[in-house]
Amino acid sequence: MIENLQKTFFETSPADAALLISEPQRKYLSGFNSSDGYLLITKNAAYYLLDFRYAEAGRKAAAGKYEVLPLTSAKKDLSALIKREGIKTIALEYAGISLKTAMNLRDSFREIGTETILDETLETEVKKLRMIKTPQEIERIAKAQEITDRAFTEILNFIGPGKTEREIAALLEYQMRVFGADGPSFETIVVSGENGSQCHGVPTDRKIREGDLVTMDFGALYEGYHADMTRTVGIGSLSDRRIAAYNLVLEAQQRAIAMIREGENCFEVDKAARDLLEGVYPGAFGHGLGHCVGVEIHEDPRFSPTCHEALREHMVITVEPGVYLEGDFGIRIEDLIVVEKNGYRDLTASKKDLILL
Ligand SMILES: [Mn+2]
Image 1: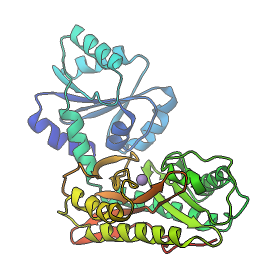
Image 2: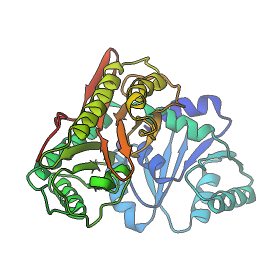
Image 3: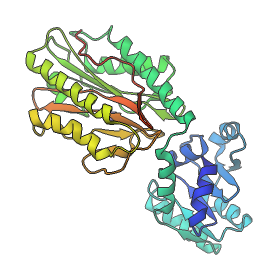
Image 4: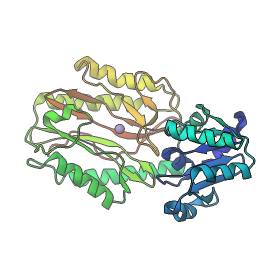
């Protein structure tokens, strides 16, 4: 990924070097994750400044992609490197860092006669690369999703009347770990009954009851890559109204997924699902239809009423329509999809016909 940035960024930028600081950008470009660090990339070299906690692991993961340098004081170490490399102009990533960090670095670079470019160009260039996943990235996301699907299969044996949302969430996360996840992709959502209308609700001590719908939104993190899925299951026998709502959400999802292929507009895919749901439950689907995933759980482009980007081969994006009726119930179904030239590949294996437990 470092090579790709070297090819694209320096073609148009007046900078001699690019400095990446935020975790996802460093993780994406270097393939190595650390809570702290500075990745400095020039036209033909890359240096990863890592402190004692990460230096050993960083060297092991380098595989010739970058050289690890010790980090004790960001200001001093970066300035020394910039001087040594004769860097006159440096582009600084700034969306994911604090204003204080940006200003301090700019001031210290100025002291050694190096100019700092603080604009969106570097950010945009990395994000552009991140949109299209490499075969290796897709493999990792697929593996993350496989772990997630396995945890879902297991949890079906556990869910039932009397179990709490909190217990279900804890067990899902435990199972993902056991099946090979490095952790959960995000805070696991388990909402049941009337809590289900809170699409990003936090699991509570509410006990599952007969007639409930239970929505679980969760994913495994695997080698730095995220999975994301949602399933809603029913407990015992459900009212006809809830069954009809479930089937409508499923139809909306299937309609949207069927449209996915390179060149299709994100807005149109969102609209296909949204129109169907709005027709029956006006105002009950209040979020975007989907988002890309990668080293971050929410990446661009999105399936939303405001995103007019065209899909491109090897984007990986969720499709997650829902219906949320306050004080009543909620339903969401989410799959993780790889965009292909003439269609798509659904990475989510778990079935979607209504499951009654
Ligand atoms: Mn999602």
